[in-house]
Image (cartoon, rainbow, N blue to C red; front, side, top):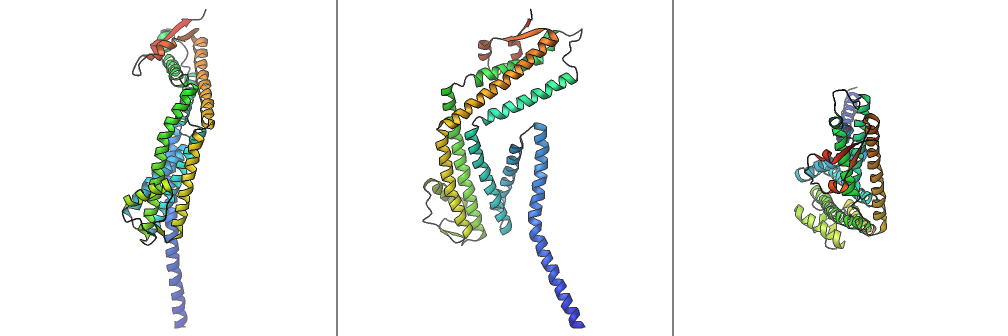
Length: 331
């Protein structure tokens, strides 16, 4: 009877120990997932207020997690946290590579974001003004004072169209795209090299024998990663773990991928995409201008006129841009 009790106690204790370690192993991913959900919820709330697209929201979350992963790699020795940090850095690299590919199909992404914010902002303002009956002219109000806000918006839209859209000739588009791409290309090279250097350095911190032939300082891993990106030479380094070989293969393919993007940028694909986007922006701005013209026509029986030459010569810090919009009665 005593033996049976001891046996049962041993089995029960063993089961509790197993449950403890299983719970601990599953707790770390669950904790990271909960932190991710919390951060995503906070960014989602902010993104909803600022009307930020969902893709940008996700990129912000991954970027924040990447900064946390970098801090862990340099300040922590825990094997599991280092592996998780390597995974997060890998996600950040994938996001960066996807971004540069997306830029080739939409090189005017910053204009795109600005136009989306402008359109959404105008739609919200216009709906609010209509719902609150703010466009109606009261007896003691003057048309010039009543249309001050509309004139400011009208002048700003016309200025943006003249200075940033109409000024982009076919030649200007190509030159500007190349300039922007060179900056983006340099940033991607630095980000990719730094990302892979962090991956190698984390493997080295997990076990010094995982990677032999680079060194022990992070700067040596960064130097190795940059050289590898340039000439793809691994002859002087010994990888004693499979994951290091996989990372080196991915780095070689990432170099080929980025070189492919370089070829794409100098073809007509990106230029045609930019021309198409410019036409789309011009149409959206014109639609808002038309809506403003209809509002002032229907409510005040007036129309707006702007001297484009005078508007294009105005300085950027000019405060009363609305004064450049001339109010005229409709005959």
